[in-house]
Length: 168
Image (cartoon, rainbow, N blue to C red; front, top):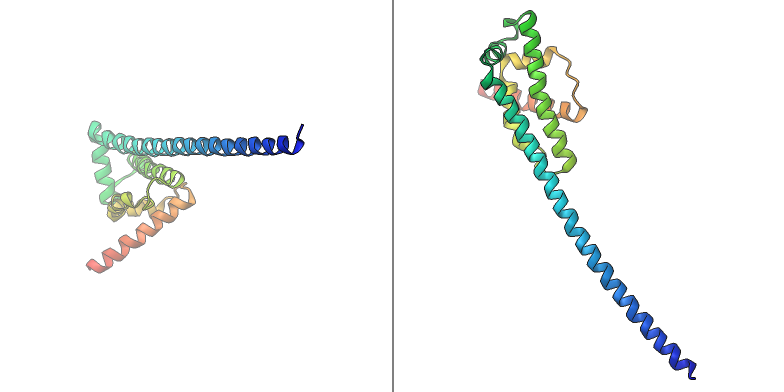
């Protein structure tokens, strides 16, 4: 037997096996990447859906409960308009509203599904911050927000304040 020939054939078979292994791994990696991209898109869509559900739930509270809507409007005009139970309910209502924004903000940040990092909600937050009673509430109430959301709200408060000073 010619051991050099057998060795050469063995090397060729080994090289072919390595090429097939690399092609198989490349195919598996490609399929895995496609699957991860799909899962990421599904996570982003689920986050968007949850954000929409949160917003809708808050709107439904006002639609279904006229007294709550009236309380919100009364407290929004001036926090001093509220006492006792009404003040407590207004406080809890604003906590629910801002908690909804915070949850959406954190969800967007974690999933990185908003390339503008939550800028879509900034006008809505700004509109709330422009309202006298809500601004008073923010100044007088400690809210247990996550630090990154607190930074966002404080930044939006500065934007609103600068817009108000330009209007005057």
